[in-house]
Image 1 (cartoon, rainbow, N blue to C red):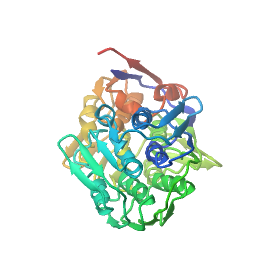
Image 2: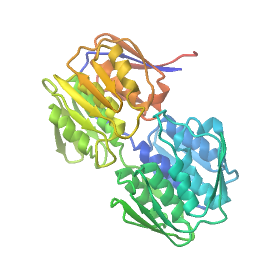
Image 3: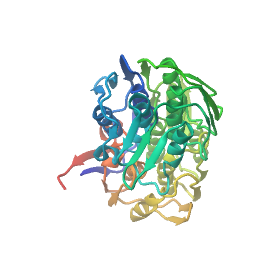
Image 4: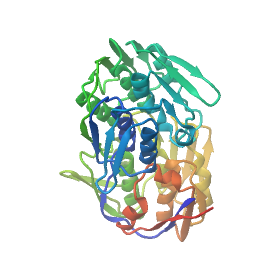
Length: 421
């Protein structure tokens, strides 16, 4: 059991180094398995639990992987894949396991997914991934606990995504990259992480056009080759640190290549947070009282659902009533009950939440229900009086590398503990 212990009252000050993007590196590890010879090198890899699970999964199907933690570098040799099975003990803890299916289909003719895991976020499912494979010519057999996808070769088709999922978009681009003929993906995701994955696949020899337009065309090629690629910075990690400065009345310099927070920055500015770019560094500071905010989550370029939970924490400390409408994942509001234990005033009605600030927060024992609620509770602990203990801290480790050490370097009083039970 991992738990985080946070004692509030310290403003965050200093330079925060933003990690590589979780939502880019996981599909890139899947993409590396498409190369039948050579070694792929990924740089700026975040040392998070999801990356460790992805490495285990790549090794389970026969790839040779070296994770150099101090250099934040992954070396992947997928020239010999030996198993089409994505074993349940890893896949159940790692929803990104579905990103390995395109490589297994192309290289071994089948993929057997024994369990699909990740965060419990309500009714999100993976149907459209498998429907997409079917459209490309695969046979999909869905059992109670196992999904078996078979294909002697994929053929290009026109695909439409009901929602512009970034994982779905990346998955279908990878499947289409080595399919015969042309594939068109309509209503494709627009996230920068998707563009970063497309950039890597293009280096590998894929022929992809239309990234960032919502209408992607993939011309199938015979083979893809191993490349070197640097993972973009994590917008969600950057957003969390910016919010840490906001709720503690602190001042941070965020360092990460080409950092762009998008709409989150503008919402924080509406609340009274100041941003200034100094070359490659984004400066964040907050003095005085936070103003309330209205948020509607949406797919990119809208407000990211992954930052809705930490933003709820910020809203609890704002002077007035904030309104949050969650349009992406119906399980996102599990945070509300935990914040209320700390003294917040959050009311949830279906997909909407009303946050009445400014309520003083008091440290207590709370539980992370998923990665994003976990990091939101860390932020709450930074602003609370006394000590906050966050159980199920493993979920936080899924998305944020060396969080306690990085925050301590900025003045936070936070420790990560491991217990036997």
